[in-house]
Every structure is written in C-alpha cells, then in structure tokens.
Length: 214
Image 1: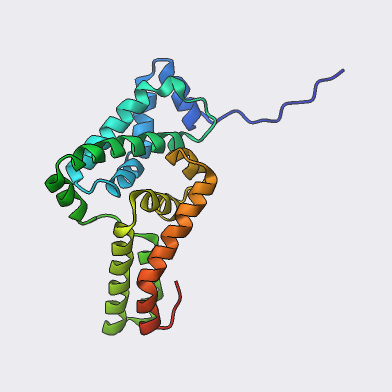
Image 2: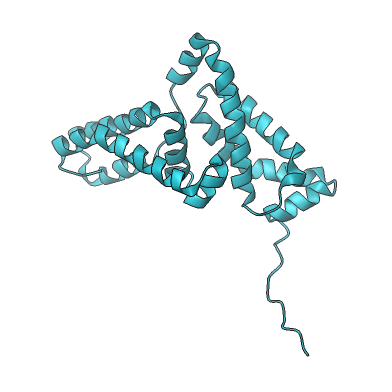
C-alpha cells in the first residue's frame, strides 16, 4: 500500500528550532543569531520589571547565559521566545528579590522613568489626537498617557507582567501562561484585573475630557 505523502514542510534554515539544533551541534554563531533576534525584546521585558538601564543589560546577559546552558532542555513544545521569556522573567524576579533586601536601592530603581518604552495605550491615544492637534488636545493626550503609565507602574508585579506581555509584546494567552508558568485561567484573570485597575484610574479623565471610554 502506498504511504500517504508527508506534506509537512521542514523548518526553514533560519528558524528558531533550527538555530537551537545548530547551537547544540556546536555552531556558536547560531546562538549569536538568536541573541541578536531577541535581545531587544528581552531587554524591553526586563525593563518593565527593573528600571535601571545597567541592571537591565546585566539581567538580559544573564538570561541568555542561562538559556544557553539550558538549551538542551528546549523541546520545541512552545515557541523559543516564549521559553526564553520565561527564563528572563525568572532571572529578573531573582534580581528583584535581591534588590528588595536593600529598600533604598529598590525604591530608587522602581522610581526611575522608562525612557524608551511607549505603551500601546499611549500610542493609541496619541493617534486619536492627530486630527485635533490643538494645544488643549495635545496636553489632554499627554496627561492620559502619563496616567496610563502611572496606572501600569502601580499594578502588582504579576498583573503588570501579564498585561505587558499581552498589550506590549502581543503574546497570546497560551504563550503568557508558558512565560509566567501559570494556568491560562490565571493569565486571563490577571489581565482582566489589570485592565479594570487601569480603567478605574483613567476613566474619570476620559469622561471629563471627551466622553471616551477605556
């Protein structure tokens, strides 16, 4: 009997799985390509947990070191960057625990501003203001964007991470569950609670300024 043809396409040469396989085979350049591909995203993720630029870079480097050492454990059940994000989150959490041992340092880091990160909510608000570029409209958009960022910063860490991975990194609920090592129901609950908290903080501003709803 003729066997049915296998129409499953092999992974492209530059796919993450192929790069992992090439790394495990001893090709160092393959892992360098993975670092280049995901370094910026990993640094953005860590930057939302630890605000000091130098610490972000150190933790990102430690993340890739840990990923390299654990590469043989990557089975391809999840996407590589989801697996990598989980390592980054755990590495950043470890650093946060160490910072909390020195309250003065921890408070200093948490009060530092995020200079290079613009939330999706801020971008949307800015785009809505394009057609109404009056000074009042610009000021209103800026105030709301600042309120959104402040609301994000005020969230408990587990809520902030869940909503950030969803809204800023565009991960699915399933990917977030893998990255944060928790059930998908927990992810949905955290994102809902985060949105409710942010909404409660900016809704009065939106109603007062333009009648918009979050």
